[in-house]
Amino acid sequence: MAEVLLFHHALGLTPGVGAFADELRRAGHTVHVPDLYDGRTFTDLEAGGGYAQEIGFGTLVARGERAAEGLPEDIVLAGFSLGVLPAQKLAQTRAGARGALLFGACVPPAEFGGPWPEGVPVQVHGMDADPYFVDEGDLAAARALVADAADRRLFLYPGSAHLFAEAGSPSHVPEAAALCVERVLCFLGGVDR
Image (cartoon, rainbow, N blue to C red):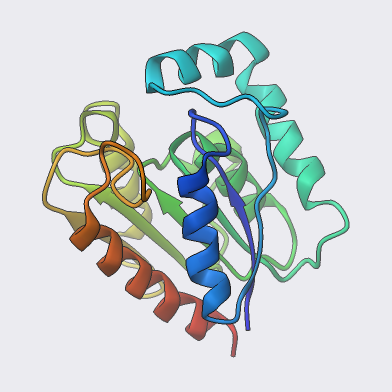
């Protein structure tokens, strides 16, 4: 079974993030879900994003790096939205990463010293009309990342919800979330070999 380090989004470590981790645990995977916000949660993305800016994106990435200390090198790095920053940086810079799962965000690999490391598979999941994912350049970055790479996949779901895979969120889309989990479990099964 795979070991996963999953980072939360701008709302903080919500019950929905925990529920997603539990889905993976039920399939036998080990999932670590650190709290980068020290217990704070928010009910809307603007407030949560404001808090992230206040403490600094560099600080959040550093907290993510500290959360990885002591964990095996051969883990899968995963993140929802804002949590993609530490997940993607670790996937690109930490030796031995087994793969990456990026939900609702993707940054150009050059942001972390690029290019994407060979042999580190990745899945990017997002909705095709999500303004955060589409209008802020994440979709373009994801398309560039997966271009001409057999072990990198972009999955687009119909709709505009940003946190579509998070149960309990007002933007939860059950059908898309179920398909996302199914694809993630297939991915984890493949990297566990």
